[in-house]
Length: 327
Image (cartoon, rainbow, N blue to C red; front, side, top):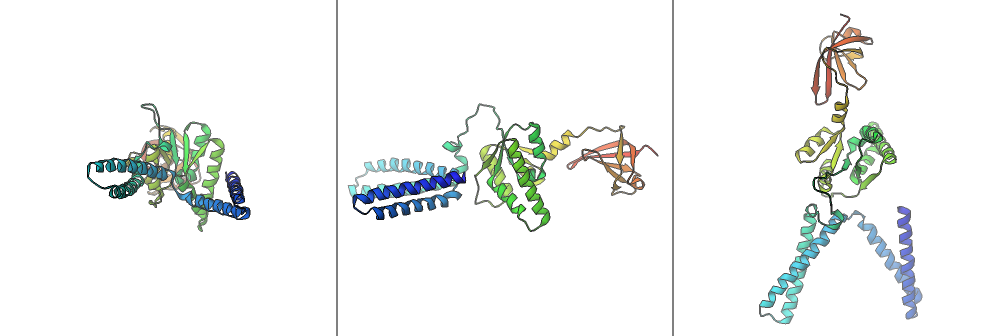
């Protein structure tokens, strides 16, 4: 894309220079016209580069507001025909009304750009009852990595969106002075690159400069695009749910896919550490489910048969309580 943009700019400079030279030749100042054309093209290119941070949605909303302002100015100006005003005063009044309503319309469009869903770049035509299939990935879901495995299974046949501000946050983490954060950031970028090979990812350029928190930006973008958010962040999950955003929590999916264990069943478990309570031993199933074994402290490092006594469901997942069958 950068190479294509470079050639476009180069062709624009060459074309402007030739047009300037051609116009200059009419007044026998071809070289001067060439320089003027080249300077003009460079000024336009600089303006184009400065507009990178301009939101397309904000610009569209402002144009919509300007059109609304022009219409209102025309209506109000026509109303002044009923009053006995001389031509010069009427002309001044029209200018003042046009400027005022255009300013008010543009300001209204920028402030209420989230509500202007009828603007052409954001028209969303869908059948009644059809659900949105767009999913926004947040930083925690990308770094977690399990989203990659989900994509490989093709169970998640949706349009994945990665906001530009999430990429910036990943880059910031990858450049962190903290070695652990730096490793997490680099892992996230690698996972994102791998996901992009599996399925098509859309990079969303929309940003909200007035908002500092990434989580708040994610919620605003999800509302705008009517999309779901994939995350493992518990706080984002709670806040987004309260605001009506549908969340795809990877932890909840992982817990739902864990094998069902019922009291009375027998398991083989390796005790790897002591528990919080007296004489307890801790082991883990293959899916990561914690198993608390009564009187298992003295059996650390050993694999033994245990009988399930109870299963506790917590926000962090399932906990299985068991008793050694060797007693």
